[in-house]
Amino acid sequence: MSLQDLSTVLRDPMVRTILTVAGLCLTVGLFLAGRRRKRLGYLVSNTRVLGVHEELNPSRVQILFDGVPVTEVDLAIITINNWGNEPIRVEDFERPLRFRWDEPARILSAEVIEVTPPNLRPTIMVSGNEIVLDPLLLNQGDQIRMKALINQGRELSVDARIVGVKRVTKRLASDREASLRVDRLFKVLGSVCVVAILLMLAGRMAGFWVADGRAEQRIAVTLAFVIVYLLLDELKKGFLDLFSSFKKKYRSK
Image 1 (cartoon, rainbow, N blue to C red):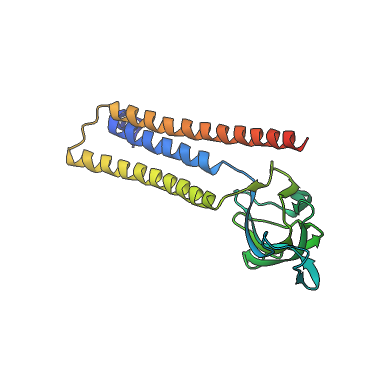
Image 2 (cartoon, one colour):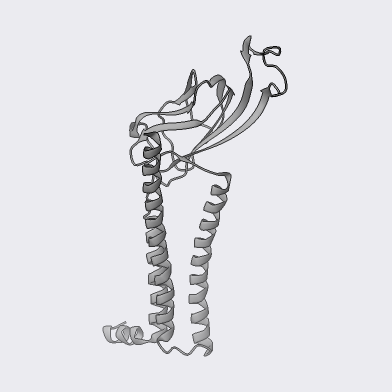
């Protein structure tokens, strides 16, 4: 094909429309692929398994766990996962990950009950009212589940210092569903773009599509709004993380 033939093809409004759709889809795809983030999150669920009813006199009722008197025993299931898209390496940890319950809490027992992938080998230590997880490699999607029995469990705080991770985020069970919905949204967007290109080609060949140059403008504007929305969403998340960090520092004073 000569340069003149190529110039003729590129002047065709239909060709420009298809190139516009393909270019903007590629831009959105590269933008999403380039969002590199380190994120470490945790989820905690608590269930009361032992306790003395408030109407009873605690001095007359005694509950023993391995020979040690207890009053209020909770079963805590802690799930830790790397929900970012970058690995967290051993050398990224400035100090280990600690789960600490406020006094007078005491941890009766703690163990790892499930890991993903199976070759993950976490090491935990229990000291009084805290569980310490030694630094380890956590690739994207890696997950650790622990269970702990805690006597008089109070407020839980999590401490860690990891390169590229602003804070260890407490997540809700619904966060995973929200993340899956976003992934599905992006897949639908990509599918719509592909279908739109195929329909334009089929319509042009069948004579149903009259290319007037305005279609590419509408498509370009629509997809440009999508890109702007994604950028604003990233700025919003960054602002919320910064606000949460300042709020946490203020409460700790």
